[in-house]
Image (cartoon, rainbow, N blue to C red; front, side, top):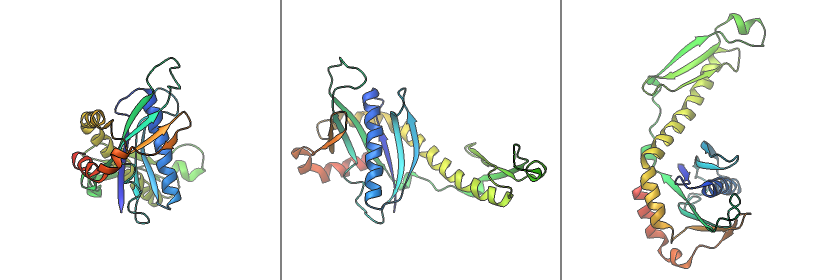
Length: 228
């Protein structure tokens, strides 16, 4: 089963953006350890190289259905700021959200048109004389991809279709993120006392979840999913 995950800094400062990037790495590592195929769909970089305002990915959970359950919720990072040495705050919070598959609409290829054109650059005479390159355009949204990877128009069309699906999923997740951003920020403010995971120090080592949270985990997780 394919599940979509969004990691958000809640528009927090760079320390939260650092935490988003680190949590993304941890989730990817978790997927690899459990042999769960995953694909990062979007990364929204912050002003500091390597940090992320948000990231989204989908995970195939058929090998481990509950792989994301331990991640959904508020994540706390306890550390002195690596970016502001004299800053007194040491607690930083981000959110990990599961997006309902019902909100992710399947791309209807009836809405996609294809245009062929001549590709430029190196590759021999065939590249310049035959209209082998393909541009796919999703009419309702205006999304488009251009492919000129091969000399075959058919192969380029297949590649364009695959990339349009990726672009379409990323577009939808971005729209969902914007529409829910205020709700997510409010939820972060409410849930700071009950993080699902705690990490500490600059090396982002895992600490155990608070006992209070463990006792209430199932109920709160279900409430979280209903809200998102």
